[in-house]
Amino acid sequence: MKRESDSAGMLSIGQVAKLYGISHDALRLYDKKGLLKPIVNPETGYRSYTLEHLSILDMIMVGRKTGIPLARMQRCFASPNAAEHAKLLSEQRAAVQEQIRELQHIEQHLNELCPLVEDAIRNPNGRAFTLERNIFLECVTVADLLSTDVAESLAERDEFLLFGPDTSGEFHEDETRAFYPLAPGHTGHEPAAVIKKGTRCHTFQGTLDAIRHRVTTLRKGAKQPVFVRFDYCLPASDQDHHYLCTIFA
Image 1: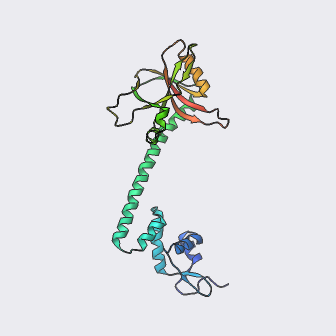
Image 2: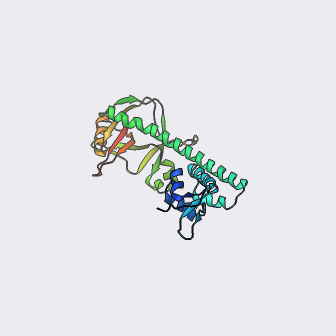
């Protein structure tokens, strides 16, 4: 059987693909993008690669490993000078540093969520504890949520709903507003409410109806509203979702 490349000192597309652990399609894509143009036999159409090609492929692989988009490599390869390459690498380093910050932020969020769910597994009936610090809250109405800026600023902050008693003593959530911890840097912002240090707290998991009933049981006979923090949602296909929450009663 005739080999894809018969020229001495050249490698076939299959040999290069095996050597670098990449697919034939990847090499064809680099050819199409103008990053790595092989020698093509006009009679057979077979692609061949020299050692010089491998040097360029090494640079492409470094770019792929560091996450540089092919389009950006194209622009850089079109201007073969050190300044352009330095700019490319500096841009990618900044992009990677931003990705690291985002991943660290995600890790921090997971570090907060994992103990909540694990605690719910260990204490399916909930547990009681005493609040160790004041929680300062700002109020957000439904109208406020229509603002993109407001919605984005609240995306990763805990949501607190206010539950108040009706004339029969049953507690229901206030559906017109929600409360969120004051954003960092808003030191001069007057809080709309404060959950005071020393408040007795109760973790609970259940549907909204179950949460209402639990609040009513805990606050039986009380006339003051109570805050409930929704910590995590356990979605259900029938839309009767369960929530892990903390009742500040």
